Length: 212
Image 1: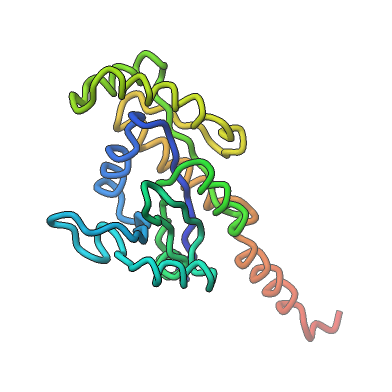
Image 2: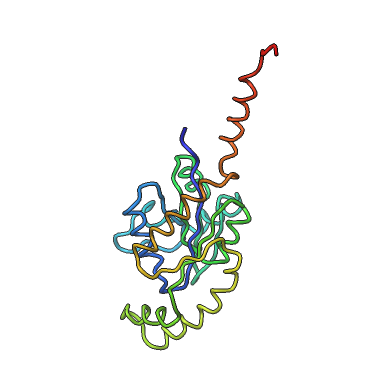
């Protein structure tokens, strides 16, 4: 019997390594699906609808909001971004553990709609390491890096509502730690009520007709 997958949200500071961790997790294990977001922004060169994003018009996206077809959504720099409910539900039914890489406020909205969602927050081992990783990208100036570090303080508000904090120190260790947490979540009694009830019914039916 194929088990329904789990919904996992991964959040973290800019520079914590979420993208790298997710890429390696999907390479190493085959039971995960990364949720694809819907957006109203224009596709960039090389991007394909249904692969990087589901590209929508503003009217299409707003209709999805009205019809409650998004787990969460937000506006950023004049464009909508959101998580389509249908895609996530489909992958969960197929038995995949679906991972959403979104920020804290979006994560808490998802948790409201899906209380069984597993919330993980990815952190570097130290603040100094976060600064070092941002500098190591060589893509941003000093002021931008400083702004990102200050923003991390704001981004940390709400972390106490998460189920797990995962330290991204050594990549392979971090990926295996996330995988192990998810495996353990599959063993929770609340995620196995169907099997428990089936077992109880089998035991009950086993003695039906017993004359003793």
